Image 1 (cartoon, rainbow, N blue to C red):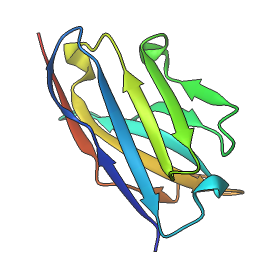
Image 2 (image 1 turned 90 degrees about the horizontal axis):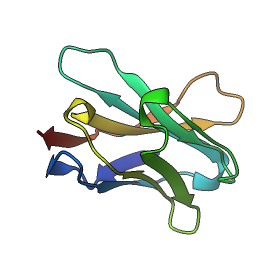
Image 3 (image 1 turned 45 degrees about the vertical axis):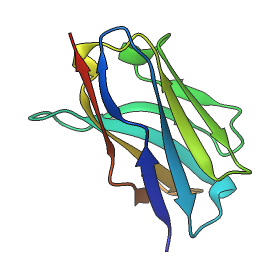
Length: 119
């Protein structure tokens, strides 16, 4: 069974940085496209960033471009989200997700890690 476990969230001040990690077990990590999503209270879940299986292709939501960086280490079965210049509106539960080849949507989801940014 594939499991995704996020870590690295916390309470920070505006302008601070955090690095989220998502460790994947129970599957072949290098075969999954990976993504980060977030959900703030009372809002829909939204896409943050994604990275291809090889790490050669990344995509970002407009609201994080230039501030967040997604990366992966296939040797460690881990995907990361480096978040710089955090804003109060970045406050949300951040979840990672994995998508197998040919899948239309993400197959696997973690429970999430909370990020709270104070002003």
